[in-house]
Amino acid sequence: MKLLRSAILIACLLAGWQLLFWFAGSSALTSPADTVAFTLQLVASPSFYPHLAETAKAFAVALGIAISCGILIGFSLGLYRFASEVAEPVLVALYSIPKITLYPVILLLFGLGISAKIAFGVIHGIIPVILFTMNAVRNMRPVYLRAARAMRLSAVQTAATIIVPAALPEIVSGFRIGFALTLLGTLIGEMFASQRGIGYMLVRAMETGDTGTVMALALLLVVLATAASAALLRLDRRLHRGPTP
Image (tube, rainbow, N blue to C red; front, top):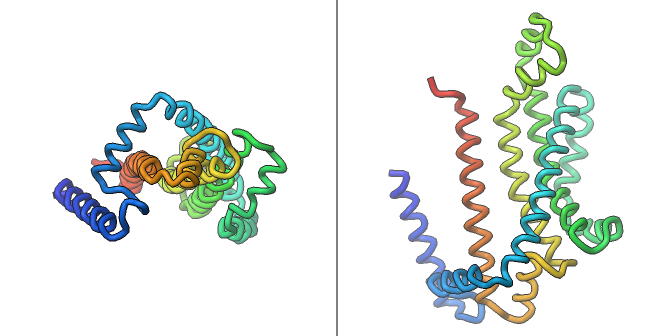
């Protein structure tokens, strides 16, 4: 039944895409069949893979920094209620700022190149991870910590056997959002000051009016992001349900 619903949804999206193509014309977008053909042609081109490797490298480093630092900061704030209550509105305010306004500052600090792309990806993805981790630790049931004290667990044992397992479902939720936003930030960083990468290819294709390449890159990003998001969502739901008996 789930597969049938998914198939119906995909069919409706493709039908809507085809109708939009007929309405807007080939100057605005390409049809689904033509987009798949452009995508296969792009993937078969050897010149595509250096750009893909550049984006993958910047994204992997940015995601690693955003997740590791976000979890560390979130745990540190969540263990102290006063610190988390002070930090939360500040983080929410920073999260609501359009990150593109910070790009000149990023360029001044890190210069042109991969460092700026990594930094721009990190500032997009780290705050959701901090907020989800902080709230997971802060809202943990007090009985867990009382049990740890009763069993005379050390701080490391308490973190490893109680705090992390209890907070893990919310951490994964933050990771799922941080993943998408870090990818977005990395691509935006490549669009403004880069000579390689998927974002650079998108900007160059838009400047030259290469609609086929724009649609092919968009399709690739949608497929990859959807697959990763679906896998993380499945893990998220499984963790929130808890172990099956």
